[in-house]
Image 1 (cartoon, rainbow, N blue to C red):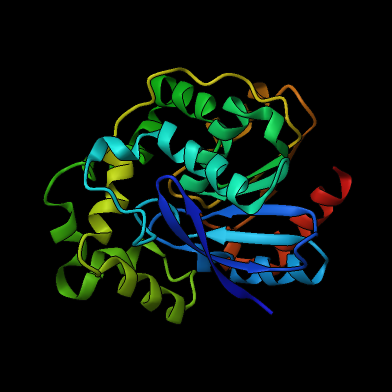
Image 2: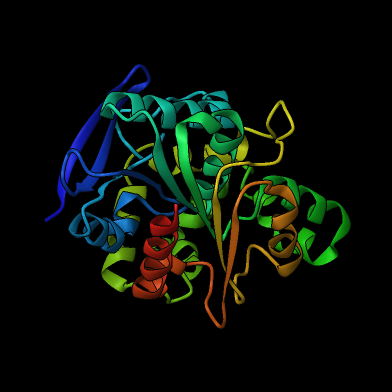
Length: 276
């Protein structure tokens, strides 16, 4: 049975979905754009039943209690600090970290900056940022796929995305996310300031530092039909992991893995956690 939490941190209070015994092995799950913690509803419930303590927060900008107005407050270092602050508030020393889309990027950066805090890392869809940076420089296909990241920095993006009953946002989910879940996301993102806060993750610009190779045990799950991330960065991610590494390629699956194939993904996650 899932429950709702408020996680107090110096930045504000994060809303979260949780399940499992308080003393269970801790797992933190980070959502992507344009989603929320509820994207992990299936995984949180299953992990909880298996004895893990699973917590999925609405991240910075998505939680009304942590919605700063300054674009600079959405830089990657603040997003990583949020992960550590939430773990501290939950009383977790080491924990397993799972992320999808932007949550995956934050997970990779957290593994780089705080490897001592992570028992393992799982990224869904998002390749290692170093592999992605190389692909953006050297692979025309990836450069084309990633053009949206620059386009969404425009100040008229909110208006375009919400026009016509949020038609542009609806199309993003590619009809792979359950309809009622999409309506939930759109309701949340239509709240005053919510979509701007979510888009500020893109507007905050590049990290000040380069990311290094990751040494914690890592699982990377990628769907072959992912429109955002192509095969070049996906296959090159292995070069950026020095610890135990597993790559799971899901044929005919799109970007929305946790919600498109929840059972298959959760099985992969449980198997991976069981090995580490």
